Image (cartoon, rainbow, N blue to C red; front, side, top):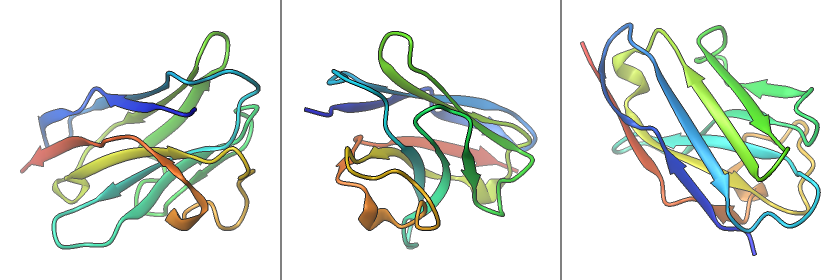
Length: 128
């Protein structure tokens, strides 16, 4: 059973950095596509970044390209990281990691409906 847990959120000033971690405590077999999403107050959930099973293929929303980096560690548990640099006030949101054992990524990586397992979310607040 997939059990995702995010950590590493917090409050920073604009221009600062944060690193989010998502651990799948139910990891029992080969890695799968994993994604990071965010939802700001009053807005829809949006895909931020995604990463393939091998970690070789990554996807990013245009709004975070060049500032965010997704990576993963498959050596022990299914752990995914989101390195966020040059943060802006518009990055303020609740961030979620997500996965689905049957989803292999692709053009629909940013569609939340492709994922059936979600973490509880973690808040990121960027002040100007």
